[in-house]
Amino acid sequence: MWVQRLLEFTGWEPSAHSVDWAAVEEELRIPLPTDFKQLCEVFGGGTFSDSIAFYGRTAGFRFNFVLSWQAPLPPLPAEIGQYQKYTPGGKGYIKWASSEWGTEYCWLVDAQQPGTYPVLARGEAGEWREYDMSTSEFLYRVLADKDFQPFGIAQYGLDPTFQPGPEVDGR
Image 1 (tube, rainbow, N blue to C red):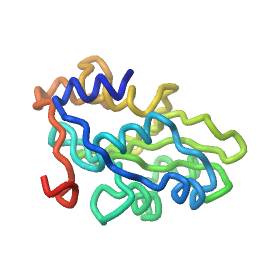
Image 2: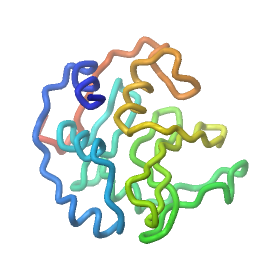
Image 3: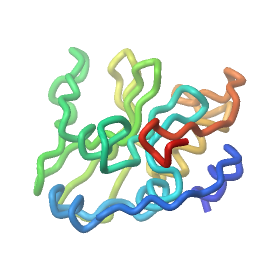
């Protein structure tokens, strides 16, 4: 439902992106959210509304979900120790998107509780907020809901677009 809303919001025509989810999930040692996989398969990696970088790809360098997970996400002084980066088989956060303003969008995952993926969002000031909603619902609210604060961007009047990363389909 929320993936479809994102397609309608952006006017994006779904494209087929083949992903070897078994390999990705084996590396992470957890299953990933179904709606995230759907987002990756219809959008690939790219930028929403010229502001939100979505790491929906598993090949190439830019917008690569696996590489974004492997890259260091430095803690800010206000939240050192609050959440740790996920390590396979453990508990922690995995980044799946970010904004041009320094906001990070992640999940809090626990290999002992597969299937539970609260969204964590961290603003430029370093504060973490947890949301009990799917990845696609959170992303839709960030893009389209003017009242979704402090992480929503709809109040800025940005065009509701999706621009795929440069390596996708040559588009």
